[in-house]
Length: 201
Image 1 (tube, rainbow, N blue to C red):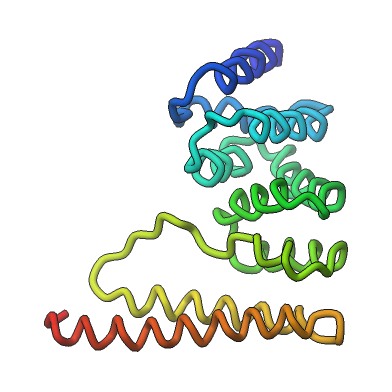
Image 2: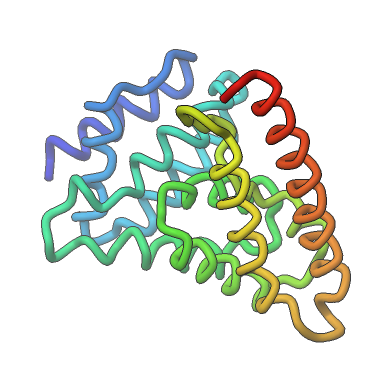
């Protein structure tokens, strides 16, 4: 683990002096930090440093952080630690807009059920609508082949699965926000479908 700690030091320096993207090798090494006993403190520090470094490119916050919290590079005994850290981070920083937006990007690599679990946890800690709106629900970089309609429908289905989290007076405006997003997606899907028919897809 001494090698990992040395790499962490060099990584933090890289954030301060370099605006280049992290490589796959970088994120693989950083994900191994979850195997350290004080991984929560270390990961918290990394997030703080990311936020403080103004020269870090926007895409880092989504793609590279998704890789860091992936369990794929971890040995079996440590694979529950990214989940534990994300929950710790939400419970600790639920009123920090930048940090919550950052973590909402990090969890985009998880399956739908797990992402909904994290959103539910956030809502139990913070009922502020404007902060909820800052959560990134979908990746900025999506790829598809053929028709885009199934992808849009999948997004609509995901938004519909969020609605059960938004029952009660405290979440009336949250629910309206998601319902409006669903309607916007449906209108966009209709437009895309027509465009694809005209293009012969």
